Amino acid sequence: MKTGLKPLLWSGAALLLLLLLAVPVLNLPALLFIMVPYVVLYSTLSRGAFVLHVLPVWIAAALIAGPAVLIIGLFFLVPAIVMGHLYRKQTPAAKVIRVVGVIILAQLMLELLVFELVLDLSLLDAMSTTIRDTFDSVMAQSALATEWSPEHTELLISTIINMIPLTFIVLAYVYAVLSHYVARRVVIRNGLDVPAFAKAKDWRLPRVLVIYYLIAYVLDLFMNSTSESFLAVALMNLVPLLSYVFAIQAIGFFFYIAHHRDWNRAVPVLIAIPVLLIPPLSLIGVLDTAFPIRKAFTKSH
Image (cartoon, rainbow, N blue to C red; front, top):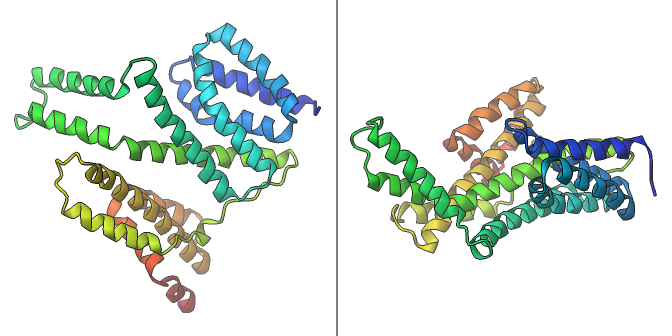
């Protein structure tokens, strides 16, 4: 069993993050990095040593902050163990992100199902009620435009509910990327060789995604905006999701140009901000995927 100061420090970090989950304001940053200690411990220790380090942490957290924090901790423990296992196998970073993202997404969907079937608590209904009560209160104070009606509120609620799959997908993969970004650097310093993610300038999407995007976009144009059919809801999530994917491709395109034009590294980072915030700019990523436009910039250089 591997022992030493570093595993004890990471066990202490895991305990601290669990305790911070019960502290307002600090619970959000704690939530963002809660997977990291478990990834580091699992990838650098034997399974038995991992259990011996984590078990006292969970017992202490339950005694100090209550068992509620362990529910959140358990949610992130599973993808953390999977990420640590993939690190030990030296799995490519793209596959690590993909697998861990899918696991987090599946857990989010399963959580909704468990609350609905086991606890008889509908989070969707609770969300709808909260939004409806908020708008009713604002309307009672005449703080909304006179054109706003209860029908608008119901349409907003329906849109938010229908966009939950997209929200979950984005959250799952952003969280997987963030955890991997931090955990990989720590694990490497502990002597474990973990493959790096491809550099931004080398990001390339398969061209078939362009065809899928065009089909989804055209179908969405002819779809009734108020429809709640499966196809309508699927397109409502698929079109913006693919738009985000191509926005990331567009960022890779600008990193490619920056590399060949010897731009300052800060330039493509600054360009990435409007690309992510302004959806039409994702068209650059579509063009970069569909056509060999990078060659033009390489030749001109």
